[in-house]
Image 1 (cartoon, rainbow, N blue to C red):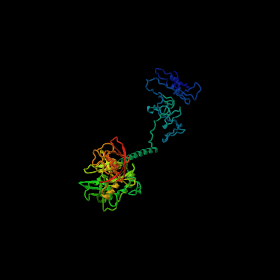
Image 2 (image 1 turned 90 degrees about the horizontal axis):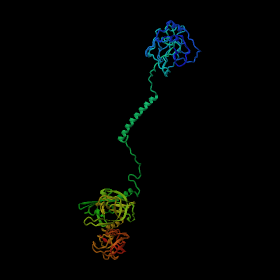
Image 3 (image 1 turned 90 degrees about the vertical axis):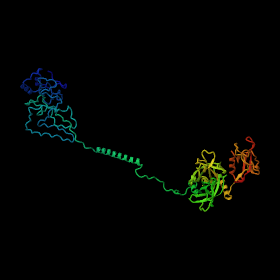
Image 4 (image 1 turned 135 degrees about the vertical axis):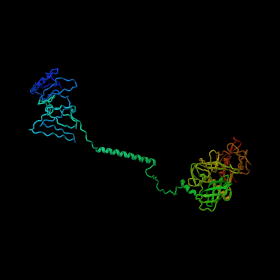
Length: 578
C-alpha cells in the first residue's frame, strides 16, 4: 500500500508499525496480536535521510520535534457516515480540554481590556508524581467542537493554554498502559476548543451621546414654543400691546402759523370773513354763502340765493364763530346775479381783501370756501381753468331774468350751497364770486343751488365786475348796465349777433344811442368785440356787460348778409338801469 498523501510533501519518517498496519487485509481481518503491536510501538523510527527541521510533514503527520506515533487502522471500513471506533476525528472537531503536563507552563494569553484573565492551576513540584490519565478517557463530543482552523477573533479569551506541539496532555491522546496514543489517536495534542464571543457588558452612554440627546430635546421644545408663539401672533397680531410711532412736536401744529401762501394759511385767514346764509320766503328756503365786504356789515352774495327772501327778518346770517345775525337785502341785480345783504349789531367783522381779476392767469391756484349742502366752512382747492368764459344762467323761473357772466372757470369743487362764496387766489385775495356749475347732461351753466354735484366745471363772477356792481347796490340800491343801444335778434342761427330783424323786439337801433351814432343799422351782424369773435346774441351781451358804462369798444360789423363786406366801428358804451 502506498504512503498516505497529505499536503504533497514527501514523508521523512517511516515506522514499522505503519507497515504492519498496512498488512491488514481488505476483507476486514483482525490486525496482529497486541504484543506484536506493543513491540512495534517500542521500535524506534528510522529516518531514510537527514532530518530537515524546516520541512512541513504531510497533513496529519508529526513534525520533526516529536516521534511519529504508530498508525492504527480499523479492520473494517464501515459504510459512509458511520463513525469508526477509535478513529481520528475530522479536522476541526473539538477535543476535550487539554491540561499541560506538570512543569510545563501554559502560554500567557492577555484577555481583552476589562475582562479578567483566568487563573492558572498551581504547578506541582519537581518531586510530584506525574498524573496518569484514566484508561477510560472519554472521547471528544460534538458539543466541544472547536471553531474553524484559523486565528481567534480579537478580544475572545482563551480558557486554557495550548501546550507545545508534540507534548502529550494527560487524559488526552494517551493509550492505556502508556502506549503513547489514545484509542484511534495520533499521539499529539489538539488545540482546545475556542469559546464563542463573550457577551459585552452594557455600554454607558458617552458624553457625545448625552449631548446629542439633549440637543434633540432642546430643538423639540424650541419648535413647540415657536409654533405656539406663531399661532398667538397670527391670531392677535402682536405679542405685546401695539404702540404706534408718532412724530415729535411741530411748532406749526395745533393751530400754529402756516405760510401765507399755503392752503391752510389762506383758509385760516379767510374763514372768519365767510358766512352762511339761509333765506326764507314763499314756503321755501335757500342756502348759500357770502363774504364780508366792510366793517359796516355789508355782505356780498348771489342774487339767486336771496331772491326768495321776503320780510324784514327773512335772511339769517351765521358766522364762522357760530355767531348769528339777521340780515336785510339792500340791493340786487338779476342780470349780474349779485346781491348785497346788511347785518347790524355785529362786532369783530373780518372783511376779505379784494384782488384784481384781470391779472389772473390760467393755471393760477385758487381756493373756494363755502357751505355746500349746508356744510359751512368747507374749503376746496383747484386752479383757474379758463378766463372770459361767457355763460348764461337763470331765467327758468317765471319772471326771472337771465344772467350773463363773462366768468372765470375753475376746477375747484363747487356744489349747491357754494353760491356767493369767495374764490381766492394764492395770496388770499378774492378774485371771484362762485355762482354756477356745469351739470352733467345740461346744455348750459346753472346756479349751483339748482343742480347736482360738481364735475369740475365751476364758474365765478370776476371780482372786478362784482366790485362795481356791489358799490352801486350799496350806494344807490341798484346797478347800471353798459349798453350799445340796439335790439338783437335772438333767433338768428348764423355766425355773430344780428341787429333787429325777425325775432327782434322793439326798435332795432335806439335813436341817439351809441350804435346810432356809430352808423349801425338794422340787419347788420356784429362778429367781433375788441378783437374777440362773437358766436351769437347772448355772447355779445356777455362781452358788453363785462365792461363799465363809458368804456370804448371796437366792433367788426358785416352788412348785406353772409357775403357782405365787413367794416370796423368804434363806439362808447352807454348806461341803463335795471
